[in-house]
Amino acid sequence: MTKTKNGLIIYNTCDGGNTLISIVGDKSYEILLHGQQEDYGFVIESVNKNKDNLITIKTKDKDTGELEIFHFKWIDKNKGLGTWTYSFATNLIFVHAGKEKYYPKVNEDCTHFWD
Image 1 (tube, rainbow, N blue to C red):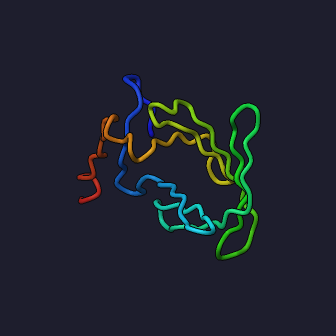
Image 2: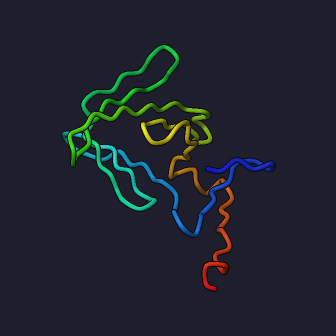
Image 3: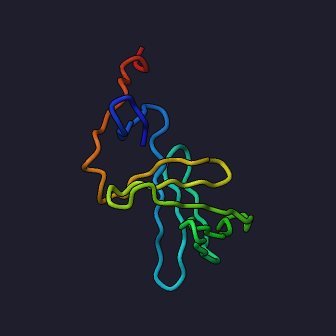
């Protein structure tokens, strides 16, 4: 999500793409990060929620085994908005896939890349 003077939008850039976060699994669960250049997978080891409703998810990188801590907090659950923070991103605003239709989508003009 991108903040503008008129509110939040889904802004699709030409060169990077938006980061998508999925939690998948059946008996064990993983966080998958899709977007930018590569996809990353993290095996969820534990999940805790504190009194301020901050959810902390302890994971290990599927490829390297390195510890990665994710934090999630709802900004507005009814609007599907929450923030994710992890080692290479801080307080990114995300919208639940089921609520994307309520936000304008803007595509960056990519014609300048064609020259």
